[in-house]
Length: 182
Image 1 (cartoon, rainbow, N blue to C red):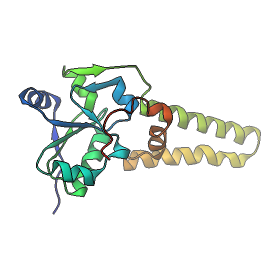
Image 2: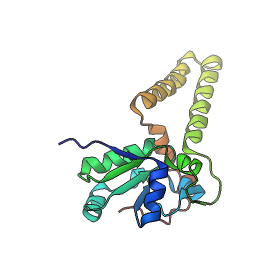
Image 3: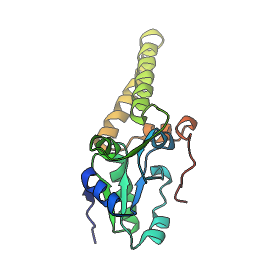
Image 4: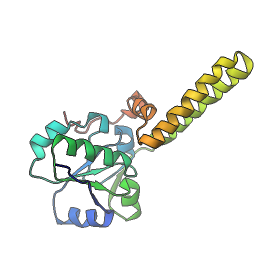
């Protein structure tokens, strides 16, 4: 049986929040969550999302999943659906769309986005590799080629290994006081 991914727009989410207690899971890193999140959201980072535990505790409850712009939220939903949870809904446009729609948010300390960190690291590695290829040995050209191939793969597959690794770095774990789903 294939279950299709349901979505909700921020305006509909706002109405549900006004009507009562909903289960809104934010799958971004703790640092991103600490910077800004929709009021009432719980932080369970994507890499720590325990789908089996969620299945046991949320079998009869709809779970709404949110991230920054919708991509990681979709991945979180797919993970939950694969585990057998059927009442899973992705928030279209993520936290950014919710802010634009005027939903109440909690703001904290400003942090650098995960996507920006990936761009800085990938660009830095590619530049160093290119300089080494020009100045030391042409074989170093493999470094920027590897980074470029990784970026292409990330775009095609909508998964980014570099982003997943950076998300685990200590500076992206600050504020890890919320539930981890384990």
